[in-house]
Image (tube, rainbow, N blue to C red; front, side, top):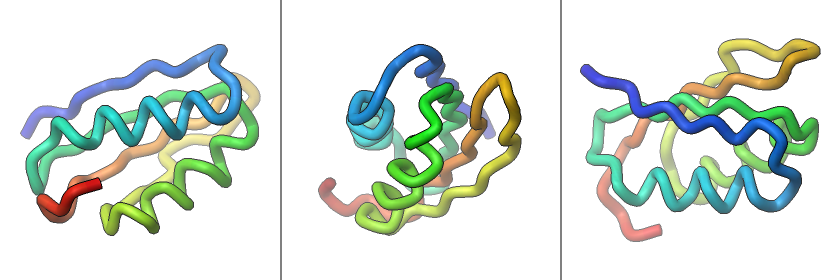
Length: 79
């Protein structure tokens, strides 16, 4: 299974959530998206977005260099 990577380092709210939403639209159920953000608000915004879309998110790493999310597309619903 391939993982699509999205580097959003340096972008500020609301761009990380907006670009993540757009990237999710191109995924099929079961595919994964790895998102790297440096905006501290992404730790709130990305999980809130994923609650809306019904997908699954996990924080792989949260450190001084940023936040790394792994998102799995669960269904083919419109977003």
